[in-house]
Length: 334
Image: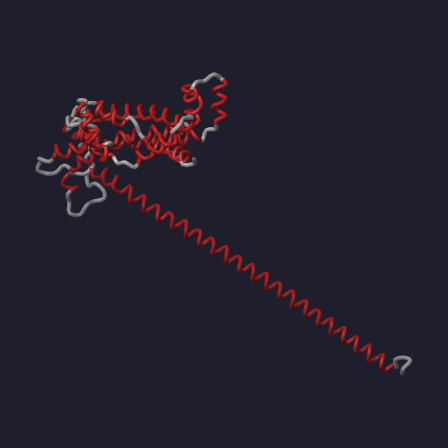
């Protein structure tokens, strides 16, 4: 036995090995099957979890977008409803307009309200005065704003930053604070009920100087150096380099100046006390005084006058809204 294994032992050993190999094989196959099944279950679990996560994210994204649209729709309707109410009220009769239960659509369209406004008040004169004052205000603010913005953005002189801080400080002062001294100066100059009294106090806008300065600062100095090499002076640099490169901002300023001048009410009401110099914003309020003595308040015709007053502004904004957004975004980048 010491020299070798007997046949029995060999048989037992071979049987054990065979049994063990079979067991190992079966065990290996079972382990392999369990491993494959585990990986399969893990993959399925991850895939299921990933699908659920993506679906959840998609649902959340859709809910967020839907909520944004709902909120934006509510704000839009809130802002547009007064305009809608003004338009439909201008097409109603005075009796329908004063019904206890208001109607959202005219029962009978009264187009005659608009020519009645032109007959009852010098509306054409109000329109002319508004165009004149707005044009000169826009021209003055653009010219002065361009020159001041060039000095604050590209000029090199002592106290530049301090002066610009003073300009920014003017943005924080409401017109009611400076109204009395400006009115006293205009009165002493004899500009009450005159175009200079309406225009001159509004020839400078600190806000537009700020916007133009920000736009000019976004233009690289290399363009100005190239212009100087070509022999351009400061006015030439403004005309041929800065203004063309800041076109959207210039259009934005011109549009906003026009809208501001068109809607101006507080100062024209104080300075213009005669119909010869009243603007359209003040003229609409005069319509109410004109109709106050009638048996039935003609608020429908007052609304018609308001519609006629805002039509040019709405048309201008719809045409220029792209440039306004571009100019605002560029001014905010610096």
